[in-house]
Image 1 (spheres, rainbow, N blue to C red):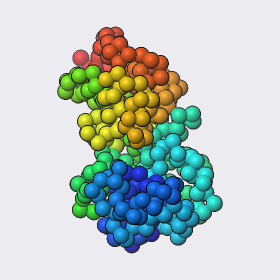
Image 2: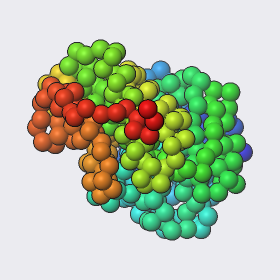
Image 3: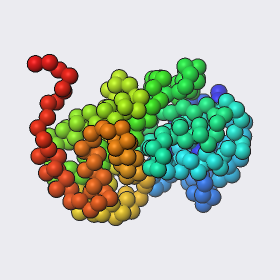
Image 4: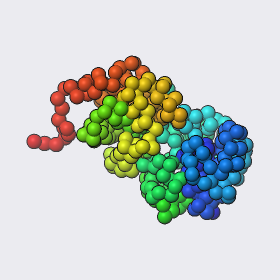
Length: 335
C-alpha cells in the first residue's frame, strides 16, 4: 500500500482518488478551496462534475496543503496546467529529494513552452517528475469503465513503481521512457479537439472529423519529433488514442468549447459555458510559438489560433485549409 496525496479535487483528481483508493492505497485529496473540500466531505460526491460517483469514506479530503503532502510516497499533480507552476512553488517547502510527483494535467506553458514535468523539475529540482496520459475521461474512470493509459518517467524503476500502483482490472497502464512525446501528444490533441468541435458546430460530418484527426496527428507528430518525441509515441495511447477520444467524446470539454465556437460563440463565451478549464486554448498559443521556433508546418493548429485570438470566422478557416497548396500525403514514399 502506498500513501498518495492528490493535489486538485476537480473531476480528474477525484476520479483518480477513487481509482487509487479502490486499489487499496491510502489517499488524501486536496482542494485549494475550503468550501469545495467541505462540500465533498459532506456529500461524498462531486455533484457538479462527477454526479452519481460516490467518493469512498476511506479517502481523506482536506484543504490543508500540509495534510496532503506530508509522508506521501507519491504526489499526483491534478491541478489545471495553468496552475502547475504556482502549485509547484507552493508545495516546494515540503518536498524532499527524490519525491515522486506524477503530473496528470495536459498542457504546454504559454510563455516558456515548457511541458508540465519540465515546470515541476524546474520549480522543485529534487523531485522525481513523471507523467500519466492517454484516452481517459474522468467521467468514465470514476465509474470504473475499462481504460488504458501510459506512464512516462525518467527511470524504469519509477515507471514500474507507478505502474504497479495504478494497475487494476479497470485501469491498465503501459510505461515509456518518452516523457516528451507523451506530454506533447496529450497537450496538442486538445487543440485538434477544438478544431473537431468547431467542425461539429458548423454542422460538418464524419468525413471532416476523420480528416481532422488524421491530419491532426500528422501535425502533432511533426512538431513533437522536432522537440525530441518519438514517432512510436504519437502512434500510441497518448497520440492517436487520446486524439480520437478527445475529438469524438461527449465528455470532451475541448470539443464542447469548439462546438460552441462553431455555432457562433466567442472563445470567452464558450469557456464560460463549458464551466471547466479548456486546456486546448492555452496550448494553442504555445504550439504556434513552438512551430515558429522550430519551423514546423501546423496548418490546422494555426487556423485554430486565428479563430481563437484573431477573430477569424470558422468558415473562412475551413476554406483556407481546404484550398491550401496541393501536397503529397507522405513525401518520403517513392513513386
